[in-house]
Image 1 (cartoon, rainbow, N blue to C red):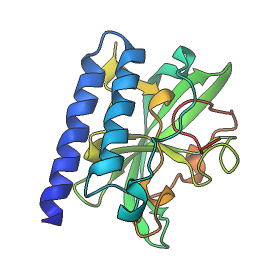
Image 2 (image 1 turned 60 degrees about the vertical axis):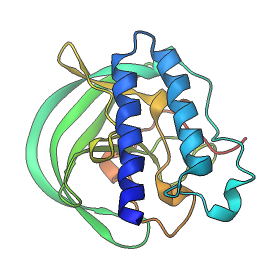
Image 3 (image 1 turned 135 degrees about the vertical axis):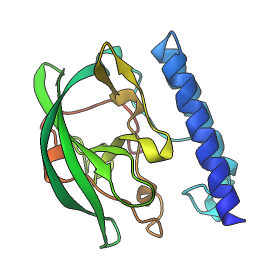
Image 4 (image 1 turned 180 degrees about the horizontal axis):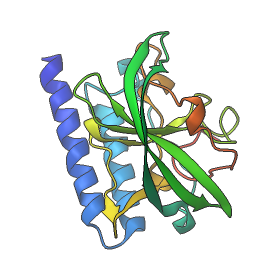
Length: 201
């Protein structure tokens, strides 16, 4: 039954990101995304928080929505590079770096490597760690895109949508029993990204 529960979780996440991509107002879509995530964390059997903590769960913590944290990234092909991304539980995740995304954020030119995960069905994976990590946000970094789990913000005018308001913690941030790939060195930003999920203030 765990497999069916996981299927239901993925189905709901995929449906939510489909709503986000089709929404006219990104801010309203973000509010809806938060509501769905809070509902899943509070009640779903596949919630990353333990069953004993769910009764007292009052919602995840986020920065206020910032329209400036939504950017369109230019994507350039990179020489294919097979990499093992370090995981939270000491394991590694096979991946291929295939492209580099370039964008401006908070007045700074930034880049993030794009990875294709080779395990559990593949998918585009874009984790990142920024200058708030360890103080205001999860120390190991956050996820921006993970298409195998439905986290996909789409493309606009041929450019990849990066909306850092939708950045979220990996499951291992809530319980170490979850094994998660973490942000590799090429995906560490010097800028402070005060958007998306944060540690409880």
